[in-house]
Image 1 (cartoon, rainbow, N blue to C red):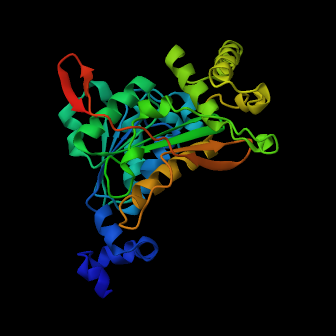
Image 2: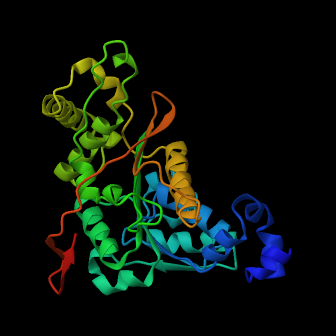
Amino acid sequence: MNSVEQNNITEEEAELYDRQIRLWGANVQKALRNLKILVIGLKGVAAEISKNLILSGVKSITMMDPEKVVEGDINSQYFFYPEDVGQNRAQASLKAAQILNPNVVVRADMSSPLDKSISYYSNFDVICVTNQSPEVIICLNDICKLYKIKFFNGDSFGMFGYIFEDLNETEHVNPQEQVSFQTALNHKWTPNTSIKKRKYEDPSYLIFKILIDFYVIHDRKPSRNTYEHDSLTLTKLRKAILNKFNVEEDILPMEYLSNVYGEFGPTCSIIGAMIAQQVVKSLSDDFVSPHNLYFFNHLRCQLTGITVSGELISQKKEIIINSENVVELEV
C-alpha cells in the first residue's frame, strides 16, 4: 500500500485496480490515469479497444465515428443494441462504454477525422485508428509523428486481422524501426528459400497487402453481400501480389482469402485486445516492442509479428487533412 500511496493513487483506485496494479505496477497505473486516448472507427475492433482501456482506468477516451449503425454492426460490436440501428455509432456506444468505469471520462465525437484541424489531435497521448481507408490511416499517422503521439492501427477482415504500431519515441523502439504505415505498405517481404521450411511459410503480410489494395480500389472491405464480385477482385490482387514478390502460388493458397469477408466477433476481440495491451505495455519503462506489424492468421490460429524497418531520411512532407489545414512535417 505504501508504494501505491507514493505514486499518488487513491485508496479507492488501489482497491478498484488492485489486480492490474499487481500485474503491471503502480507506475504504469499512474501513467494510465493521465492518459487521454482517441479511438477512431467504432466497429468491432474499436469497441474492444475502448472496453479494455476504459476498464484499465485511463483519464479519458474519445470515440469518434461519423457513420450510422447498420444491422450488420450488431453482430460484432457489443456496445450496440438493435434499437441503435440508424443512430450514430459513436453516440450509440457512449452509454454502454461509460457504464464500464464511471471514473473514466468517455466522450462521443460524431465528426469525420478529416473534418478536424490538425491541432485537434495534439490533445491526445494515444490515437487508435480502425476501420479507415489507407489514405486516412497514413494521414493520421503523419499527424501523430508531428506531435509525437503514440499511434496504433488495426483492423479485422473476416477471420484475418492485423495491427500496426508507431510509438513515435526513442525510449522503447530502435529509431530504425520507427517507420510509418506508408513504409509498412512498401515492406520488401521475401519468402523462405529453404524447401524444407516452405510449408511453414507465413503469408500473412501478403494477405495484408491484398486487403489494403482491395480497400484502395473499392473504398471498403470485402463483403458477403458482394461476394462474387469481391472474390474476383481478390483473385486478381493475389495474382498481382505473387508476381510482385516473385512468390510461388503454393505459398498463398486461395483458401487464405476465403474467410476475409465482413466482421467476425472473435477476430475483433483478438485484434482489439492486442492493441489495448500494447497501449498499456508502452507505458512501462521495461517495455521493448519486439515488432511493429502483427497479424492474426485464422487458418494457423496464431498471432505473428514482423519488424518493418526503414531509413530515417529527413525530408519535407505535406500533411493535407483538408483544404484549410496544411503543415510541413520533417520525416
